[in-house]
Image 1 (cartoon, rainbow, N blue to C red):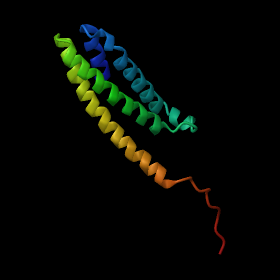
Image 2: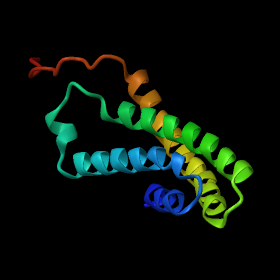
Image 3: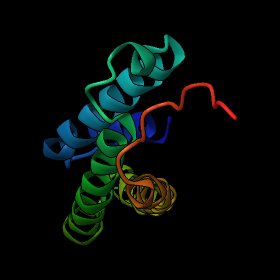
Image 4: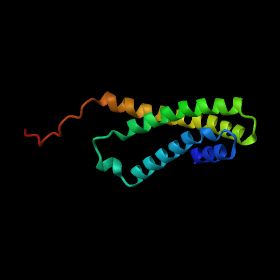
Length: 123
């Protein structure tokens, strides 16, 4: 939702050249939402879904931070300033999300390779 609001703000501003980043992040977030909702993550086991979410969050936080600084410092209209402020908020939200996802990845990596299931034990 936040990415869509930033996208709308950039369309209404003189900084319309920045509108592609929030649009792509919105579409990627929408895809991952529907992938988790339709349980695609259980059907495609070859892709580690939290890793793709982690990479999306890291890149989104970096990109939003960069374009927010540019929008706030370079453009003077209100829509650009609003998009920049929402971009800083989105940076914080994505940073929190990649921190949570990073902890999940670390837990997964500490488990190591999964062991084969044990058969019935005989006495």
